[in-house]
Image 1 (cartoon, helix red, strand yellow):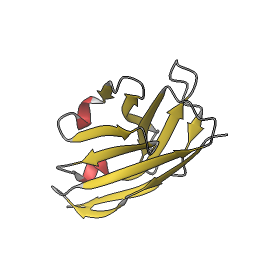
Image 2 (cartoon, helix red, strand yellow):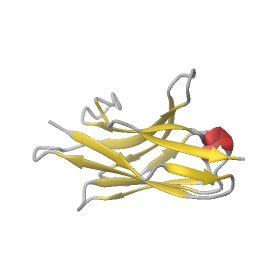
Image 3 (cartoon, helix red, strand yellow):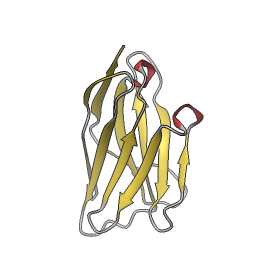
Length: 119
C-alpha cells in the first residue's frame, strides 16, 4: 500500500510564496510519477503539475508556468511544489497524487492541504 501525506498549506497574501510537500510511504512503493492537483469549492479538480520520478521530467498546466516548480527528493520519497507569485485564483485544496501504473492513472491520493491566497 502507498500512503501520501501533504503538508505546507496555509494562508498567504497575493504575491507571496508557499512550498507544499508530499511524502510517500510504503516499503514496496515504486512510483512512476507524482503530481499535484487542486480543487476550489464548487469547481472540478484540475491538474497542476507532475514529475516523472525516474527522470525528473516535469510538466505544468499553463496557469502556473513560471510561478510553480515541482521537484523531488528520491531518498526521502518526497515531492515538493514551490509556489511563487501566488494569486487569489490559486486558492484551493491541493492534493498530492501518485501513479504506479506508468500511464498516469493516479491511483493514489493524499488527503489534501488548504492553500488560501488573500488579495
